[in-house]
Length: 343
Image (cartoon, rainbow, N blue to C red; front, top):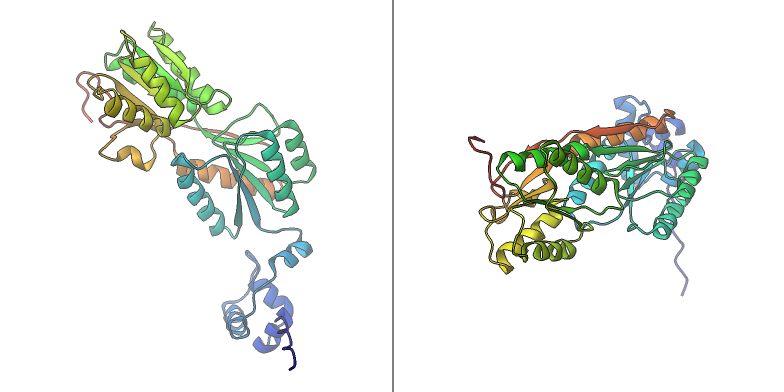
């Protein structure tokens, strides 16, 4: 009994021979952004289909120095905002001839370091971090490797890093102004994780809005971007003899948990007993069970700015960019409206 011979791998030279074109023409057809006539492209693709040829992306990366792969590092996906944002980031990059590798890292520095090390091994052209912190060492390593990093939905006090966020401070201030205009006087804030710029900036904007009206927050407690923690904080706030009449929650993910806790476990009414406002405007915010009034993160504008910044840096723009994009307050039925307000 004789063993079968392994099939020989089809090469670009085979495709060129069958299509009757040069090997460099085959390379141009399969290189995003390279020019080839429609006639040549049609002949090459037909030959490639017939032979079962697929271009070797990694080999081409070794020749050109470009992998056309973007590494995307995300802390968590429980919050609905991130699947929506990642889908749009992926589509926008693919439209420009790039592919993405997604890695989960959490917020621990050692996890982020390991993931970024793996991405550097893949010779990615650039990295987008979604709500992931960068240490000084990690930033230095990426800079030394010539790989640009753009932080998405997170800022950091490092002049070397580009970042794209909504205007979190303005959003927090807008929520305070809206709730005050609605006649609320005991306004609490279940803050986003205070280890993140988003949580701190939303809280700071909220404080500013309250102070401008001569009011103090009823309470401000870190909800840590956790459903369980947010529900626990809301129950503690609303179990006291004097409870808040409004709660600004640092993101929608926590706001849903707060509404569930107050309505289904404590028997309170939203907004009759307690008004709730969130931040993000994820798809579930519009569901009838929540009808959540919330600040909308301008995700399309954020994605556009992230992609433009990253690709600009890949092409040689060495200047870091900091984008703060304003988002509107989307008014639904989870918060009492200011008198005379008409949606």
